[in-house]
Length: 412
Image (cartoon, rainbow, N blue to C red; front, side, top):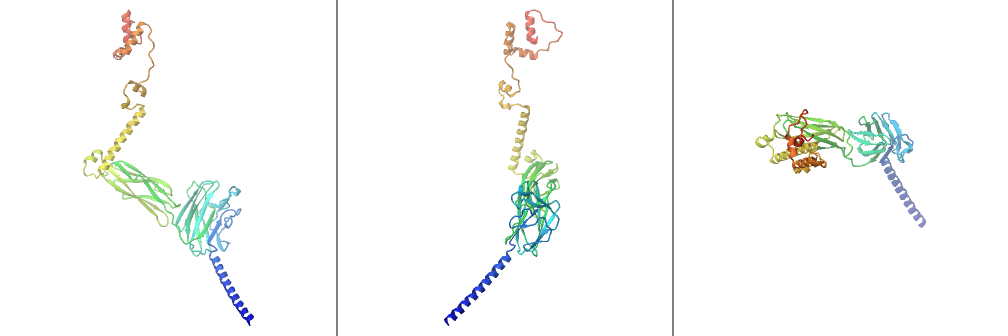
């Protein structure tokens, strides 16, 4: 009886253990099935060196089955490889192209993934535009350099399609070396751009021009075209933006031109930068332009609404400009500052008067007399005002005639 009782207990415990094991196996299996595509890695290239844990694409066309998924290109691509010259198996080869191409993955079970896309090449520049759901991302790389972007993708019926194309004409190809899809619960922010304007204010006379430099940049690889425009423009002021559109990062010049009839006052304008992404992302900045008729109008015309501080600033700017122009002229003439020219030595040092050597030692009494009168300034006065001697004059005779003839015409 006792043995039968213990046997029943053992059988009961065994049944419970078996049941629990079955439940655990089911839970683990369900968990593994649910996370089988939590991380999906694709290695693009020539199949010569697939990175561990990656699905080899090798330029294959859709649908190619692997690990319960179907993947591949919907458009033809080029296979490029650098072999053992690149140690990292993910980076040594790539799928590249001149024409746009679309990569497709189906069979995904999660609702949201972060997609890391790596692009670069060992010997060529690459400018790869990645497009998904109306958003564009840019990956630029120099030879021997690989860069990446990370974007959020949301499968539709388990399908994700990503477009690749090249940007510009200087770069020959786009490239993709690897894609890693990682399931997540949090979406990443969309690509954005920003705008900076320098300066934000100008002061000009009527009929003058002002130039503002506009800079467009992106912190997260925004690759849609950005269009620039100006709002609140008045009829007497014209605007020209060059270039009026571009891909971040780029710079443009805004030139505002006034006319003699432009009213003298302070104008406020709005500069708009709008992207061609699906959300039509827009950034706006304010600038000002102060127009004055003339210096006299600025100080006497009560109808001109110009702050006193701005008026003083304008006078200081004009004075500074005059000083700069005068300094430039002096430098071009190689003259010293007039305030520093105190005597003959300063003039000689500045190069205005050439430096002369010592006068030669006099020879005889006549030479000594000439040297004395030269130092006393007598000969200089006589020579400056005496008429030039003619070539037909007869040589003077006598001592005093010769002497005074030498004083009037030292050449003889």
